[in-house]
Image (tube, rainbow, N blue to C red; front, side, top):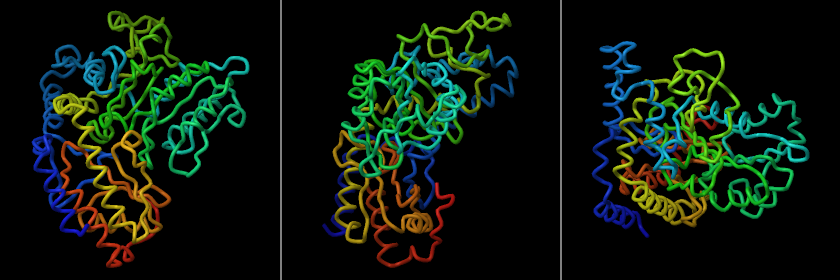
Length: 425
């Protein structure tokens, strides 16, 4: 298909897009095609309004905002958890906003990793975001366990994806806990959360999921699928802003567990200000909080999450699949002859919301794209990731982005840019 035909197809898709009205809710950089929503989502007007409202409360109420804010800051973490629960298929009490992604993983590991006899292995994978691996290995060391003996990785046959067969083969009777990503951050592969969870439980292991590239992008059913716990960031598809507070999920059947790490905001709400020296855990996921919540890092979610809720995760996923299909098809047609490989699974049920284009000069190409108004991100060693957000990315922008990628390689413009893999995010 020639370039004009691709542009026409994109315009046709835009004309019938039911989510196109949401574009006006976002601040989009002028003269820029923003395809880094899988790293940092753009600011929405409702998120901005919610943050300004929190600042106004701070100015007008001071400390009174803890009880007199709208909503009261004292309950803000639980309020956000209730807003997120439908997006991840959870009950409201099973989700809370707290801390950061990695700190939440440390909290969940301290609670759910319980080595017992020969069952001491903590299962992860070599393709997950490195911070998860750092947390897992450091946790094992803090517990006096030898990572060489107790840490197992699911092998990857191609360096991009994980096969169901290899995951199941790794879930031996010595596995106490598995921690896996629902969507792999580099390739965009979507794992079978329900199937893997059931397999782990059938083998006597607990399992937790990193949803950082899944929450807000793909429909999830954490409660019904039986996940023991999950954790994720809120600054990608969920639009909470840079450094937004993260969130976690704990299945209701584990509400009788006491969190491994204690802090005063995990206390029973009705006893928290009694200042008792004995910890009494709150009911539900709220018990997994430690320190005072970061109000200004949570406030934008009060605007962003209802916006996503109005659009509907089903409609978001349907458009996302059409957009990633367009990326893959254009890549096959126009970019493959120039040395590009699509590293993302092609089956709709096996991919998340971004597409990984691999090229030996990926670092230079990513820089060249930024210089000509397309914002991707780069992941070593050779991946240019394009992450459209269905609420503000049009099909026409996707087509133009691929055509610009074609141009920077065909013209050799990318060769003017440094090849070092440094801060391309």
